[in-house]
Length: 433
Image 1 (cartoon, helix red, strand yellow):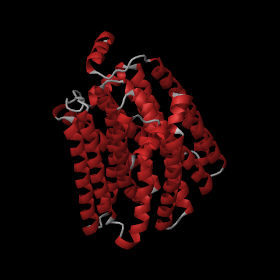
Image 2: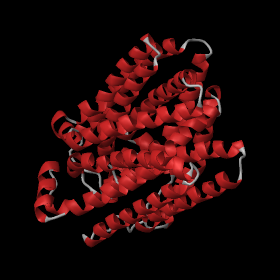
Image 3: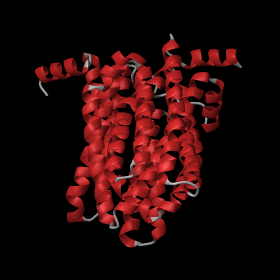
Image 4: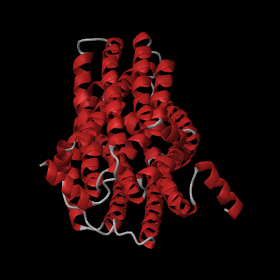
C-alpha cells in the first residue's frame, strides 16, 4: 500500500497516523479468527439439528457446564502468566484441538464425537472472541474505540464471508473433514497478527500486557455485583442471550420442518451466513463509526432490541422460511455491526481486572448460562404453546432488553473518567465496600 492509498484509508475511516498499524493488525487478527470459525459453523448447526431439535436444550446445558469448568482455569492462568504470552498460547491450544477433531472425524464415526464438537465449537466461539475484544480494550482508549471498532469489526465480518466461501468451494473437492486443517491454519495466522499487535503495544512502551491479572471467575462475579454499571451490562447480555436462543430454537424447528435433507439445511445455513456477513461488512465499514459518534451509544444499544420485537411479531404472524431469513439477516447483521461494537465500547471505561475477569465472566459463564436457562424455558413453553405463540410471548422480553440498553448507555455517558488503571479502581472498590 503506497502513501496515497494509506492517506485515503486514514481519511475514510478517521484513523490517525499512529493508529494505522495497530488497526490493520487487529483487522487481520479478527479476519483470520472469524475465517477459522465460520468454516466450521455450518457443520455445527447441522449437527445440532441431527441431535434432535427437541434435545437442543441439552446441548446448550452441556456448553454451559463446560464453560463453567473452563473459565476458572482461564482465571488461574491469567494470574500466573503475562497476557502477551498467555493469549497467543490459548490460540495455539485451540489449533491443537482442531487437529484432534480432524483425527477423530477421520478415523472414528461415533455420534458422540459430533456432540462434543458442537459443545467445543460453542465454547471456542465465545471464548476466543471475548479475548479478542478484551485485548482490544487494552490497546485502544474509549474515544479511539468509538472511531476504530467499526473498521476493526469489519475484519471479522470479512473473515465471516471468506470462511464460508472457502468451505463451499473446497468441501466437494477435499471433503468436509479436511476443512478442519484449513481452519487450524487460519487460526494460526490469527495468532501471528495477534503477536504483531502485541509487538506494537510493547514498542510504544506500554506495560499493560506484561502484568498478570489478579482474580478469578468469582472475582469477576464479585466485581460485577459491586458495580451498578457492570450489573447493568450483565443484565443486558443476559437478555440478549435469551432473545437469541429463542430465535435460534425457532430457526431449528422451522428449518427442520422445511428441509428434509441434511445438505439442504447446511446450504440454507451457508446462504444465511453469507447474507448476514455481507450486510454486516457494509454496515461496519460505512455506518458503525458514524452511528457510534453521531447517534450515540444509547441509540446503538437499543436498536437491535427494537428490531427483535418487530422480528418476533413477524414470526408470530408467519413461520415461513423467507420471514425467518429476513428476521435473522436483520437481527444478526445489526447485532454484529452496531450492537456488538457498542457493547465492547462499554468496557473501555472499566479497569484491566474488569476487562478480563468480569468481562470474561459475562461473555462466557453468564452468556452460556443464559443460553441454557432460556433453552429449557423454550422447551417448556413449546410443550404448552405453538411456535407462533412463543414469538408473541418474546416481545415483552425485547422491551425489557431495550430498557436495559437505555440504562447501560446512560451510565456510560455519566462516567467522566476512564477506569483504565488498577490503582484508581482499587480506591473506588474500597470506598464502595
